[in-house]
Image (tube, rainbow, N blue to C red; front, top):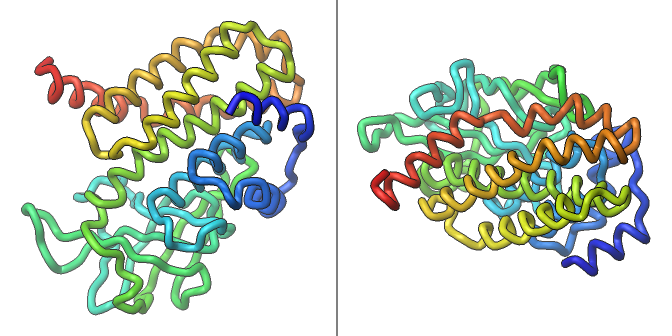
Length: 301
C-alpha cells in the first residue's frame, strides 16, 4: 500500500474539482476496479477538498453495503426525517407497494442517481413497525429532490426527498429488516470508510508537504487498522470497540495535524480544513454510546 501511495503522489498532482460531476468522473475512473477500501483510500489520497473526500468514503460505504446496486454510480442513503433516523422517528410509509413521506437529509442531493429509502410498513416486529429498505432510481415518478446548502461541505449538494405515492415493484424491496440489516451496520461502514478517506487525504498532505514523520507514520498505521476493521462484521461489538479506539487515536492526533497544516499546507487546504473539520466531530455522542456499550458487553464495565 505504501509504495502504491508514494507512486500516486509522484505521478498524480492534486487538483480542484469544480463540481460533483467532475469529481465523480475522476473518482470512478481511478477506483472502478477497487474494492470499497481502495475506493475510500485512493479517493481520499488524490483529493484535497474535504467535501469530495467525505463523498469518496460515503460512496465506498454504500458499495460495501449494497454491492449489487449500481456499482460505480452515485448513490444516497435516505433515512433521516424531521426528528432523526431512529426507528421510532421513521414515518415514511410503504403500503401496497407505494411510498409516501419526506426524507430531510440526503448526501449528494439531486446529484445522486440511485436512492435507498428506509420505510415503515404495516407489519410489526419486536414491538415496532417492520422497516424495509427500498431501492429507487432517481428517475422514478412521484419523487422530488430539493437541494439546500449547509454552512460546510459546500462543494457537495444536500437535499430533501419528497415521495408522493411513489409506486415500486416487489423486486425493489430489499430482503431483511431495513434498520437492523442495513441502516445500523451502514453507520459503522461509513465511519470506517469516511475515516479512511479523511486520513488518506491528510497522509497525502503529510507526504507532499514534509510533515513531521511521527504524524505521517501514525496516519499510515491508522489506515492499516481501518483496512483490517472493514473485514470484521460491522455489527460486532469487537468491531465497534476497535473502531472507537482508532477514532480516539485520530482525535488525539488532531492538534499535531492542525499544527502541520498551519506550517506546511497550502492556503486553499488550510481554508477548506478550517471550514470542514467540524464534520469529524459530528456524531461524537453516538460514537461514545457505541464505545461504552461495546466495553460493557465485552468487559462488563
